[in-house]
Length: 116
Length: 353
Image 1 (cartoon, rainbow over the protein chains, first blue to last red):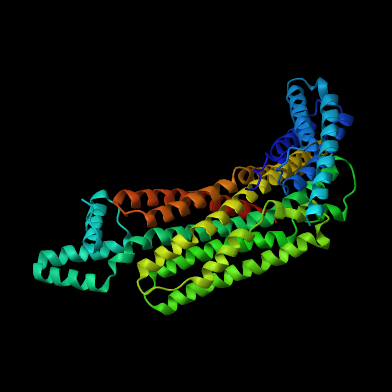
Image 2 (tube, rainbow over the protein chains, first blue to last red):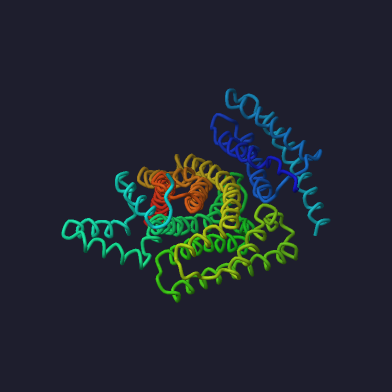
């Protein structure tokens, strides 16, 4: 029997990307921080387009790292919505998330190459 | 007591009338029987005997729901097609807005298709095959001569074989040179080979029966699993495309706000008003598209399809027919909403050009 697919990180990532764009549009945030948020939102949107095409059946360390990073950045975003003082946490969290997604995508590509 | 054969169907017809639900095709027959009964009981008996000999009541019970399902599937596919083709447009637009937001120059990479054309094509062909299957069911239910039935089966066969060829070709593309981009490996989420292979077998072995009702039942029951699988796979796939769309909307909205704020102090009131009107109209279209939930349309298609199969397997009591009609009506209503939303967005886009 084939393995049951795990939740695709793209589901949660979609919400993160939308929140990042929303926050980046907040005129109360300094221009340089908004630029940083736009950049993270753009890069993560690209990652989202790649992740939706994949199916995960194995909770590897890279997969777990992405899920943990998603939780972390989601919490930072929720906090930033209440108080815009913590933008740095969001930007750092988004950078960490992008890096963990890169690792997961590389792993997925290696698995696909072996299977092919 | 459970009845069987033609008298049982007539009993069902009577119950259908008292329940207020009667397939359109059966209404005129029943009214004719009532009229003749009032004029002459002997004539009525002869008329009923003629009906029984022709066997035409046996298929009437299927015609209305099957034809409604067929119409709804075709309408749903006509609306999903522009939605699918629009995913890449939205993504490209979001890329361009992103560059504006980040104060970076545009590049041709911003216009590259997020979903390769061949991947869109296989989805469109899968939708066409579902519609073709619905069309074949309706043709079988409505047709009296073998030639029409053969034509419908041939059309379904052509679509299934075409889809099968595309799926095989796509497998080569996905594992070949175009597979560097992870999106080209959409096979991971949309592998149609299982249901397509079953449908190829079905088309190869589908024998057209002389008794129409039996042919309809055979077609519905044999096509059940692969068509259901096909709808299920497309539903999951469209759900992931919705995630992409939603992220694109967020980018476009942020971009519109940014552009407006930049133009605010540099633009005359008339031009600013035009800009506001343009943004409001665009935002309206985005909100409409965002609310569409294309995957839930496929859920309703699947429910209606399942109800059709359940009905075919049932003893076809008025409740069974009412359940089927209810499920198909839900699907039809959802299709109408979807159609209207897509039309309103398309009209807005046309009028803004």
